[in-house]
Image 1 (cartoon, rainbow, N blue to C red):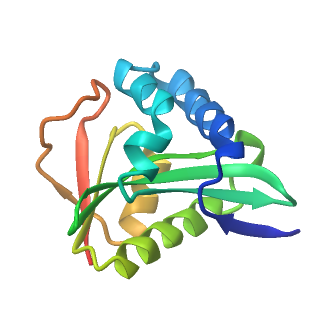
Image 2: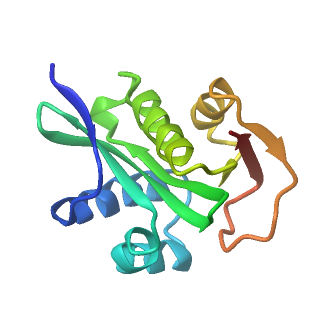
Length: 152
C-alpha cells in the first residue's frame, strides 16, 4: 500500500469539499461558514499562507486537513476528514504530523482548533498529540463546543 501526504493542488479541491461535507452531514450539518470556506479555499487559505494537506492511498484521496493562518505565530487546524473506507488506518496521524511540521517550519508558536465533544475519536487524536483544552473563543461554528491548542 502506497500512502503519502501532499500539499494543496487545485485538482483536489472537490475532494476537500466532499470529505468534509460527508462528516459534517453525518454528525451535524453544513453551516454557512463551511460553505464560505469551500467557496474560497484558495483565497482564504492558500493565498493567506495556509495549506491544505491530502493523504493519498494508492493515489486515491483518503483524507484531508487545512492549516489556516491566523497570524505569524498561530495557525488553526481545521476541516480534518478521512474517507469512511480508509478510517482505522491511522491516516489522521499522518495528517496531524504534517500540520505540526508545517507550523513548526513556519516558526508558529501555537496551533489551535475548535471541535465538538461528541467527536470522541477526533478529541483522542488531538490529546495524543498533546493538544490541551482551552476556553472556547467566539467562533463562527454553531457546532463548536470545545477549543484546544498545542503550544509549539
